[in-house]
Image: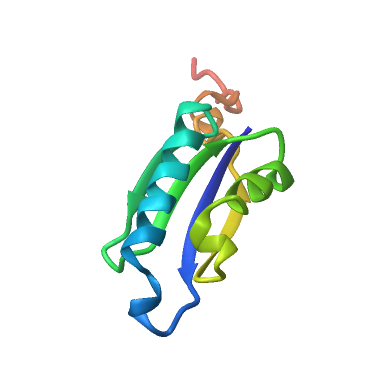
Length: 103
């Protein structure tokens, strides 16, 4: 199942994000990407991370995210939401009521 996760920064002090911690974070993200768990990763204009994950459930996604060094250090947290396929196209092909034929 596809999961969307968006980070929220918890740390008030930017100095908490040390070079070593950010390096460890990048390494763990790479490991999760190589394992097929993280499919896409972006930053918003405000600097928050947005991830698309592949996981069996939102609970499994949360467990994977909990392994990130910035999460373990309580510097960031993630909002996690399951994604489902867009069903709006069905409206294009739904059977329309037939109009009476004019003779």
